[in-house]
Each structure stands twice: as C-alpha cells, then as structure tokens.
Figure 1: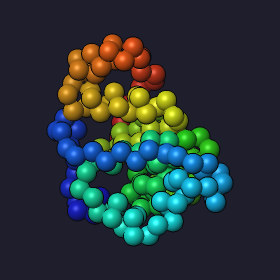
Figure 2: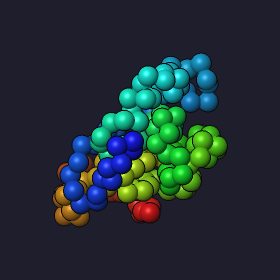
Figure 3: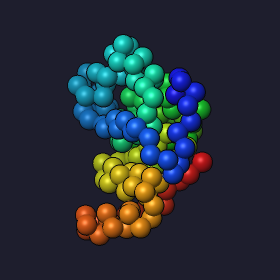
Figure 4: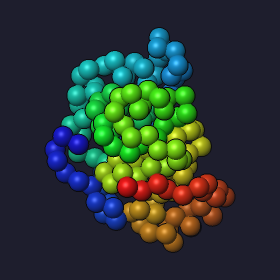
Length: 145
C-alpha cells in the first residue's frame, strides 16, 4: 500500500473487499474491466489505508492499481496469465495471504477467504463456529507467505 503501513495478522484492521464481476475475457464487458480502466478510481484504491482483499477477478482491479506487483496472489483461472503478466507471483491456491494482501481464486473461494479473515482476526475457534453456522467446510489450505 502506498502509505507504507503493514497490516499485521492477528490485528483487526479495516478491510476493503474487491469482488469480481463481468465477463473478464471480454474487454468490452462492464464490471471489473470498467474499474480497471478508471485511472482516478485506481489511484484512490492504491491509497486506501485498509487491508486489500480481492475475490475472483476483483484481484485484477487490485492488480491494475499496482497492488499485486511483486506479490503472491491468485485469481480466477481465466485471469491468472494476465495477473502474472502484470507482475504478480501467481499461486495456484484458493486463498493466498501475502501479509497485507489477501486474494481468492474462483467464485466459491470467496467463502474460504471470509472464513480465513475470521480465523486470522478472531481465531480458529471463531472460524470453526462460523463454518458450523454456515454449514460450509473450507476447501484446501490457505497459502501464506
């Protein structure tokens, strides 16, 4: 982030979630492609003092703002080559926690990201309680830098 603040695991911070949307492979599609082309939006996004969390192709919006450059990240499988071309270190995982950047792959990985945030900030017991309440079991492990 541009302010130099490292968001520490285990400490509750402001979180900014950027979800995916639109047909990423169609450059004329609304959704994330529109945000990726909006220079003023990207400038503001890069300066926000919050933990950036990208889900699916929302990660590509973070990438367009320069937030993923040189960082470990994942995104929807159709956008991984583009993420790598923009300078990210692409990891094949549902959830990637690179310290002060969290990214999730496909649509359902958003649930895994949410549960990881609960665990990271509130502990494993709270995450297990949330899983039970949602009647959802997380898939895979969180890849951590």
